[in-house]
Amino acid sequence: MRLHLKSILPRSLFGRAALILVVPIVTIQLVVSLNFIQRHFEGVTRQMTQGVLIEMRYLLEEIALAPDTASAQQRAADFGRAMEMTITLPAPAGEAESDNRYFWDVSGRAIIATLHEGLSGLLGVDLLAEDGMVVARLDTSKGEMLVALERRRVSASNPHQLLVLMIFASALMTLIAYIFLKNQLSPITRLAGAAEAFGKGQTVPYRPRGATEVRAAGNAFLDMRARIERQIEQRTLLLSGVSHDLRTPLTRLKLGLAFLPEDEETKALLQDVAQMERLVDEFLAFARGDAMEVPELTAPAQLLRHAVENATRMGQPVILGPIEGEDLWINLRPQAVLRALENLIGNAVRYGTRACVSMAVTDRQVRLVVEDNGPGIARDQREEAMVPFKRLDSARDPNRGGGVGLGLSIAADIARSHGGVLKLGDSETLGGLRAELTLAR
Image 1 (cartoon, helix red, strand yellow):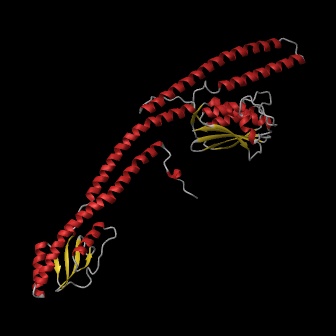
Image 2 (image 1 turned 180 degrees about the horizontal axis):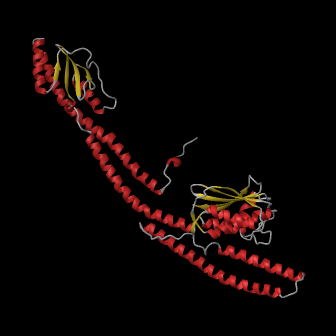
Image 3 (image 1 turned 135 degrees about the vertical axis):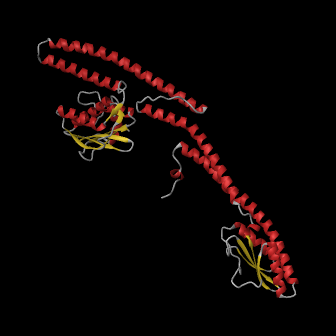
């Protein structure tokens, strides 16, 4: 499976901004370390090694001028004491017979190369024989000779100081940039939180802060929220008046029909008035939605049980299925969610002979499921079934049964106001329709 670059990149804005900040710093550090520091310390090492090289040449000349081996040994000993070197003549077998260093020892490579370039009789340089020592094996006129000296004389002893300083400075600047970046991105996070809460029907305090562009977006959000709230408030006031104006003549009609003789015509008129009342109630419930209710901490499991109990008392064939999250409490509008459940249960028992209600919980959602054994709704008509006042041609017409087809629309609207969605599918258990009301936690 091919690995996509997007799958390994951070998803949050802060993570991506931090990546944009860190990657150039790390790249610059690597470039500086591999180029400037390496070349700088290689040059310093070569210069220091050339100074020792001059001393070794003078030593070779003194040994060559000595008349015999004993005299050469004496001259070598005197030279070693003066130059802080340990000289062994003749050299024992097995030491510094070839070049030896660690693979990653860059300055050691420069030491060995410089000594070979300046000494024709050099047989080998061992940088691992003793800790912190350089051992060279030379071929002289009096035999092979070992010269040992401290490595600090041929290379910088503390090249790590510059690296430590660079790392410390980079970490300090990264920390400062992190704090600044967090302060710049936190207003965006607060704006996203306020927008998400408003999408769930909650109004949280928000004040635009940050850069000019973020403040502009925040002010635009506040204006939009104010317009929506004002529109909802005006709609609620309008519906209150409309509800009163519609119910008053219906009440007079019912009262007038109550004084008439109880014949077939009177019963038919009473049924018409009752149907008109149901139409008005359903329409007002759809238009009102859940705007008039304040969210409160509620247990969805208890709400689900209450809806099943209400349906059972009304003689509807509803059973309670598996329930997860018995102790879960979330902020929601209980009456609105209960209304949505009752609409889904009413549709289920209207088109089927039995219904099952269950609840599932995930990390971010609560799923209230209503299933039935009815004819169901075709896959290509499920979205159409949730459209207000849309009539279906199939046997599962939600506009059938004395309503106007707003039951699923009301449930879908309530789900959206709680940050969720209403999903319609096929019931694997009962074989009919599966309505899943999703609420955000």
